[in-house]
Amino acid sequence: MLSYRLDQLHARAKGNKWLRYFSVFNRIALAAGFIPSGFIKIMGERFTSLSNNHPMGHYLEALHHTGYYYTFIGVLQVTAAILLLIPRTAVLGALLYFPIILNICILSFAVRFDGSLLSSPLMVLANLYLIGWNYDKIKYILPFYEPSSANQPPVKPVISEKFPVRFFAGVFATVVMVAAVVGNLYSIRPRNTLAECNAQCNNSKNPGACNIFCDCIHQKGKPLDKCLDEYNKALKSGGK
Image (cartoon, rainbow, N blue to C red):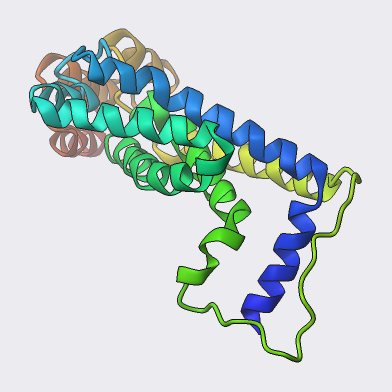
């Protein structure tokens, strides 16, 4: 059955010291990603120096003015990070962390924000790894879980010090693939400043249309969708 096969796979992974080190690395890295940003929100400070005209800057400015909701998000981020750092509460931290980082990831793609366009999907994957690492603790609430039958031998951890070359090669390939997809996903992005936005126009097939888009975002402060509409219209009209 599926649950028994997952138990076997999980036992083999848990017994490998290199995968244990990777689990600890992910816990520390994810915690480091949330603690600074969480404390900024708890202190009531604005998260970035992005202009309010920028799609992400506009969102963060509105979020900053939500009062205790802004603080609440910061508390959740710091709480999830601290729980991840404590071995006994790491699974709770991973479960709390996941919806927060997934929301950040979707938001980053929705507004094409360079600051977390690459890091947020990688953090989602790292978080999923930690959830999978703690499969033995959460499997009981999964819909496909079935208790082991009397005919199935108990699953025991398989201790191994062998370096999992294929696994880490897969991790490296995944990082490269995510970076490649993110780098080529959009033909144009708002970037963080007007200068950075205009700089991408130098390599654009239609610099005029690109400049119109940048001016729409950073000077006029229009929504991303409207600026993309203006950009596409300018492409059709030759950049005018």
